[in-house]
Image 1 (cartoon, rainbow, N blue to C red):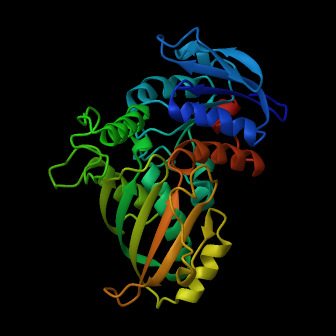
Image 2 (image 1 turned 120 degrees about the horizontal axis):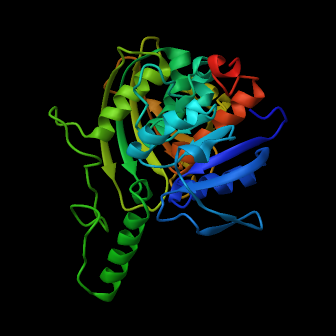
Length: 349
C-alpha cells in the first residue's frame, strides 16, 4: 500500500462504457493518482487510450496485473469479477466492484457512501456497489426512512437503454433513423422494438414472476439500509431514453408523514437535489440529471393508498451514481475518513 497521499489505481473493463466513465470521473474529480493502470480482456490488450493528455496502453486483466495497486475499480461483468476480484484482494488491492457478483455475499459490504459508509470498516478486500436502479431510488428513500421509518415500498422504474450497453444505444438510434426514413425497424438487443415503446422486462424472469432486476432492488435495498424484513415490490421497465434512470417510489412509513418535513430532509441530504415545485413545472427529468453527481427528487406528495405514505420521483445518472461515480465516492470517502483500504489481516502481514 502506498504511504503517500496518492494512490495506484487500476480499472478493470477500462475500454467499456462504465470504464470510460471511471477514467473521466477520476480526472474531473482530481482523484489523487500516483498511477492509473488500464486493464481489459486479452482482445483489448495493447490498445492505447488517451488519458489526461497522455497515451496509456491497455494491459490484459490477469492476476499479476494487480501487483502494486492500491485500488482496483471493476467495471466488468460478474464472471470476470468472480475470477479476478479475489486475486486482486489477495495482493492487498482494495476491490470496488460494480457487478452483481458479490452484492449479496454476507462477507462483502454493499455500499452507498451517503448511507452506510461504516460498513466499509469491516471489509475483507472487496466492496460492492449496488444495482443502478437501487442506488438512484435510495437517494430519495433513505433520507425519508431516517425521518419517518420506512415500513414497505413499491418501486416502478423507467430505465434508460445505456443500462444495457453501447449496443442498446446504437439500436435505439438505428430504430429512430429507420422510422424517420420509413425503413424497416430491426431489433437485436431487446425482444421488442424499443423506439416509441416500453419493455417491462429487465434481466431474466424468476419462478416468482419477478425479473432479476426487480429482485435486486428488493434484496439490495434491504441490505444497504439494514432492514432485512423490509417489504419491497418492484417493477422495472426499459424506456427509450439514452441515459439516466428514473424511479417512482410509493413508500409507507411507521411515523406520520409530512410533505414539508420530507422536502427539508431531502434538501439536506448530500446525494439528493430537491426539485419540487410542480405548480411551476419544476421536477427532475432524466435529461437534466444525465452526468450529474446528485440525483433529483421531486413530485413529493402524500400517497393516497397508504395511511402514512409518500409518493415521489427520482432521476439519476445510471452510469454515474448507478455505477462509476458510486465506486469512486466510496474510495474518496474511505480516504477522507481514514478507513483502511487494506483489510486488517493484510495490513499487518
